[in-house]
Image (cartoon, rainbow, N blue to C red):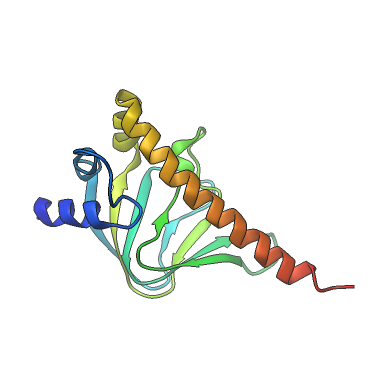
Length: 154
């Protein structure tokens, strides 16, 4: 099973091409998970303790507002990485993430991964570069959604 996880981690788009044996550092913290439709992977305010590498299914990234239905910020598909709040104190999720269909993912223990990144700054820097790219993409998507919601009013 760990060989399967090793290949899945090494070939996941977020981590593909990590230098040297860095993928094995991630693999040491990883396990396969299945999430049913409607279940939450992340809940706003709860401990950010897992990085998810989506392999199949779809997940909606949602923001809550009192008295309103959740606002879908983005829908994530296979190949996406989910969750970066584990990188930054206070290590709490900023959004909800809900499976909109059955999801298969690699769940990476964030405490384990963060410990390895802190012990190996070159590895940590590689992770930060990859997650910075994800964060930039999510900000761009949020900006487009805001423009779509509010930019056309006049």
